[in-house]
Amino acid sequence: MQINWLDITTTVLGLAYIFLEYKASIWMWAVGAVMQLLGIALYYQKGIYADCGMEFYYLMMTGYGWWKWRSSSADGVKQTETPISHIPMRLATLWGIIFLVLWGVIWWLLTTFTDSTVPVADAFTTALSLVGVWALAHKYLEQWFVWIAVDIVTCVLYFHKDIPFKASLYGLYVVIAVFGYRRWRKEMKSLES
Image (cartoon, rainbow, N blue to C red; front, side, top):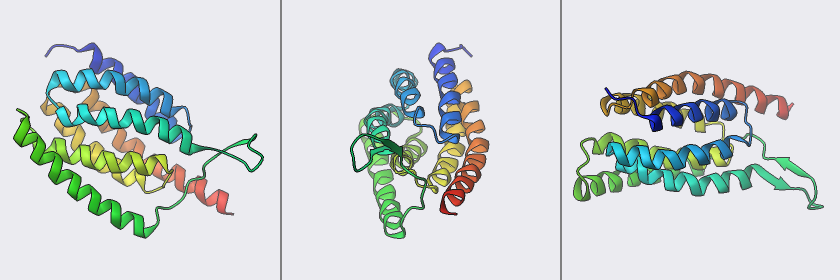
């Protein structure tokens, strides 16, 4: 096994990112942008093409997430952060359908146009991540459930593709996501009181 500096660097950035997400800090978006730029090179190098392509979407969502988490008050001067909330049921159903369609389309694209050896898992994590980052940008509490599923599958996939540092990071993400959900839920309830 050859150690890959992109694997190590993106892992360190990933730790910073998940810590900032856990804290519900807007600065996670800045760390994420750097991590995504390096991730493009890493995933392309390892032949995980859907994850590579997803990084471009993440870059766009980084700007959107930053903007969405910050909103100006009526006077246009004071900045306040968007509160944590539940995803509305109508949106959860719609995004569930969007996830299934995306999974099928990405799976087909990978099997038709690439030499991917992991099209089902790569398509699954990519499609679910597309939905997850949207939910994160809107600061929906349930985004943590999406990331738990993504992180479990990604952990296995990355070990399979010989990206051990990132794979271990995703294993840690599962644990942090559980605690993140609990922290966000507590914060949301304290704001409702």
